[in-house]
Image (tube, rainbow, N blue to C red):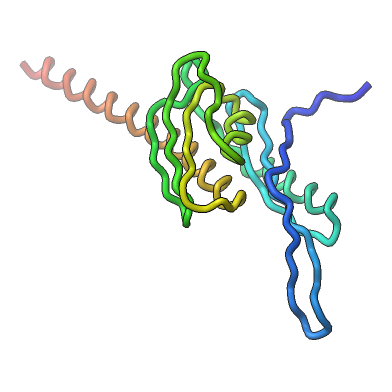
Length: 169
C-alpha cells in the first residue's frame, strides 16, 4: 500500500533558465512548488537543476522548510481585508461568507487551496510572474498572522489598563 503524504504538492511554475558562458549556453530548469496540508500550513520553494525531476525535488524540500501557519476563521476564510505590494505584484485579499469558494486566479488560488482556505476573494494586479505572485501571497498570509498577534496584544493592554483603573479607583 502507498503511504498517505503529509503534504500535498502543487507545481506552480516550471521555467527554462539559460546562462551564457564562454562555450555557449547552459540550460537549466527552475521549478516553483507549493506544499500544504489543507489545515493551515503552507509553504513555497524553488529549485534549479539540469533535470526537471531534480528541480522539483529540490523545490519541495525548500518548501517544506519554509512552512508557515495560517490562522483561519470558523468558516475557513481569512480574518480581514489585506492589500499587499511585493516587488511588482499587488494583491487584494478579502474574507468571504461561507459557501463562496476561492475566487482567485493563478498561483494565488493554488496556495489558498493548499492552506485550507475555502472562502476568500482575491485579486492580483501588476505582474503575471508566478514566482513573484506566490511570494506575495505567502507574504500576505504572514501579514494576517502578524496583525492578529498585534490585535491580541492591544486587547491585553486594554484589559490591563482597565484593571489598573478599576483597582486604583
